Length: 99
Image 1 (spheres, rainbow, N blue to C red):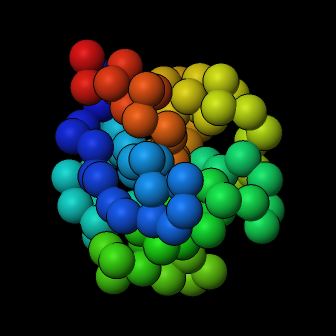
Image 2 (tube, rainbow, N blue to C red):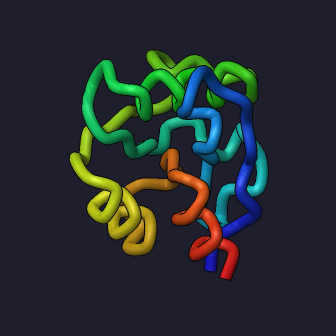
């Protein structure tokens, strides 16, 4: 259902997060103008998403809209329903995305 996860490094215990995108996102440029889900402003998910976007050559403040969704379950649901085009997920969630 979802495209391949983009694995990125991180800081401290948050290195196990992955960047997961919907199948219609074939390249980083496809994320321009799209919504990326995070948990809360300023948390590790936002910092990790900004890191991944910067690595992909995108500016989180100009190229995408970050949407605070709360819990992992809500972020996952938003990705499944198309509310967001990409999100950060912990490794266990990314295994579900690969199915």
